[in-house]
Length: 217
Length: 408
Image (cartoon, rainbow over all chains, first blue to last red; front, top):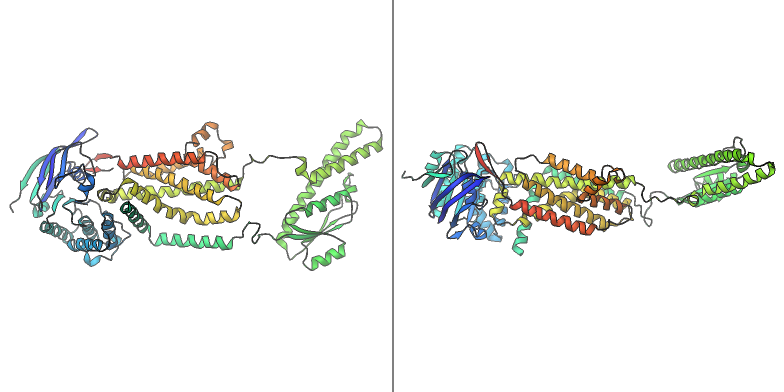
């Protein structure tokens, strides 16, 4: 379970998050939306342990974020940009991220194959990322975040600027994570898109949770 | 620890493979071909290997047979590139030249010395060339021309000396004796002029070594600039965020980047270094390579720090360029240190470029590196490492209009 309690963050004394608190249970898909500057990306970076919070606490499966080595071993992160090497093939990129996460030998191959399959990128594993379309590269980006099937997957606008077919593939992958006991936290500008996959949507406004709803559709 | 080192290795491989494309491969292949050419094609300057210039032999027809002509023959024989000097008759010398056994025949005419002492037109030194050795001949003709100019200089001084001396003596024979002695002594001293004047040339600028040292420093600094671009790309693409989440420590990332930069350093400098090793066989190769590595390591660490301090979207290459120019200027790489004000030189000493440049310059002249260079390298490396660690951990955040951007 992810527990976020009273998180504050300010940039040069300008508050961005003012006491954000929520919890996410395993297999839950939670969307975070809000207008530009609402603090969505800041929140997801804090949850990814990239940015330190000024105040408050975060824990995952009772491991506090202040123990970064254990905490980070349980999370996957998909940044807004395509965080891959364009000169390498999809497979080489995935193998690199698996190796960096500490997978070796057969386990690495299995982790890569599993992530590739879940993200529907198996058909173009030998393709260089530079030759992939924007949508394909986004799916590979997602696959890299899924290596080792983390307990918590943090997605920063994973479908920004891609066509409908690739967006559907990505959303399908995200939905399938429910079956793998993986909590998903997804930032997006578009409420309707979040509503199509999320169990809950948290709306941030001026650094506080303006609305936290459970969707029944 | 093995796991951490494995991660470093993975990062190095990732960086290297990310850099490899058709253009970089072409660059590597060209550099390898150039290195191979320099290694096997460039003649060695080492005394025990094949030499660029084979020693040559001379024939001298000495019709004058005076102390002056003997001194000229002696001077030619002492030259490093001269194998034998045959003093013989003109027919014998011509036969030798025909057999291609000598480079040229130098004919010193009769009364050459005596006429030189009088204000009369001197008969010329005759030279018969071997047309099968045009390059060597042209070199030695230039040398003889210089020698002839020296004789004319002596002659001019002699006449000036005689004109000033004449009012002091009434006896003509006495003047002639004094002038004769002075001329003989002057001529000998001029031909053996190293004995006349001992010149301390240690402070003289060695232009070739200066240019090579400057270029070497510049190339190393330019390679460090590449790291700035790579790090900015890494940060802008989100790879850095993923690396942090994968529990990669700052030192693992920094070392991996430094080592992958070595690939570029090697690729760029290896032809130049091979060429220098051939041209300067007397220099200390280990010290030279260690100086290259030290400057690269320190400047690359500083470049990594600069890239981490700046925001990913900031154009810092121009600033880095200006910084390099400032460091090179204050280190004496652009203007020699003799021409720089002392306060600029003192400023230069706080940059690694000064120490590397001065070490290159000294090593090329066979003098070894600067004193105190090892403590300086340790100090610079420690400072640069501290800076890179600080810059890695520094979380810089900014909010841009229309959305939040986090960079660190």
